[in-house]
Length: 211
Image (cartoon, rainbow, N blue to C red):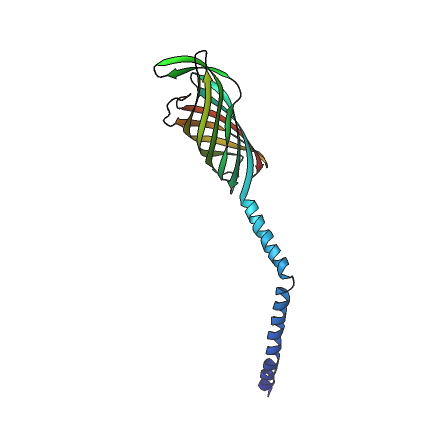
């Protein structure tokens, strides 16, 4: 008799329990309108993207050899950085002073004034252990350079292509500022005339942005 009552109670209450669970699940699913639920998903996706992708402005100073002298150059670049490690950048490099150099034309060495030098470049970089205060970095840059030189006898405007691998160290100064210093080797591809031989450049960069 007791077993029969228990079985009857289970059979009676089971459909009611299942119905209550179904109603509760429906209420949870419809607690917010569909457009609000989609907005929540979009915001979360944007936050994940914003967390992994950073943007920066890079202002650089180079000490580069032209002819027989080292000359200061400035650079301005814009870039993005992924996961605080892999970066893609592009920008310009340009001279800030006129420089007197020794320039070789065929078998003759001429004393000339370099009036202007500029290059347009793009490249990639990789920061190792970017979360640490000081960490190493590798970068590679491709570019095309334009220069203008002259003396009393002639004036020459020319260009050349180059590739520059670099090794450097970065210092995280602040959440929105990083300092980089290092050296790079400028390999100049074949050109009819070039204002500089392949050489080592010294570089300093200040990055301002959201990393």
